[in-house]
Structures are given as C-alpha cells and as structure tokens.
Length: 185
Image: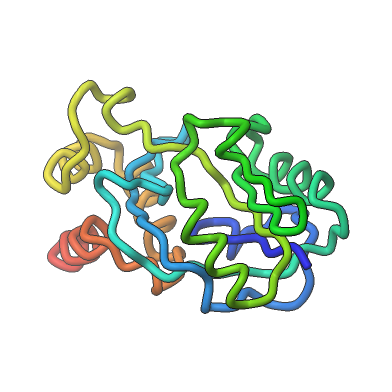
C-alpha cells in the first residue's frame, strides 16, 4: 500500500488525485507552518523545520499500485516538479532524500510511521517554504501578519479561506494568530 500524506488543500481539493477511501487523521507528526507564499498570494502550509511546529498529518491510500505512478499523480495534482515530491519506499529501502538532498529531511519520521502502520511506501508534497525569498525578510508571525495586512481585501479573503479550510489538526502559531486577528475585525 502507498500512503499519500497531506496537510493542506490536498485534503479538501484533491483535483483528480487518485486515492481510495477517506483521509485518515493519524498520519505522522511533522513540522508545519503557513510559510509559503503561493502564486495566488495565499500563505500556504508546508514542511518547515525552522519555523514549523509539530502537527499530526492526514493520509489516504493511493489508488496507484506502483510508487512511480503515485509520485507522478501527486506531482501533477500539485503542478510541481518531480524533485518536490517526497517519498519513502520500505520495500526497496530508498527515499527521495537520497535523490534530492535539498528536500526537507523527514525520512526517519515517515519511515517509522510507515513501519508502525505496515505501509510499504508513502509520498508527500516537498515544496519548501519561500517567505524570505518572496519578501526579503525572515518568516515570523509578525512579518506574516504584515504581509497579510498589505494584501487587497480579496486576497486577504483568499488567505483566510485557505487557513480556515486547512484541517484543524494543523494548529500552528500563525494559524492561531490569523484566526484571532480576523475575529477582532
């Protein structure tokens, strides 16, 4: 079995991703934060070992029976390059970090989770945070709030829609601050 790990829009907007059943809430605990600025200006949740906090992820069973097909399926859904898809393959004892050492290294955590669930392989989106590259300042809660406040009302609505639709398990400092911030308005 191949597990697809998810924590953001993949859950509520699979856009043709091939999976079976529903999203389970007992995925591996990974370091996540809303520290990527997407092309549509949304703050999106990504693996972030520097600024993230440990959050339980979700997972679903891929409909694909071959790892390469599952990787390609997720790559297409994410609209990214193959080096931005992480994987662990217990049967072949290989992982994406060997091919793409620039990926955020979560191999040990995912490997242990797969072993505990008797899952032979797992895949995930390995797009890194880009906040400093996009804005020229380090990521912080305050800099993210300033970024949000600089957006048009429509873009602010888009950011908040994404944050609110993200599964509640993804409970990060920025999410709590943004939900508190908008509750005051």
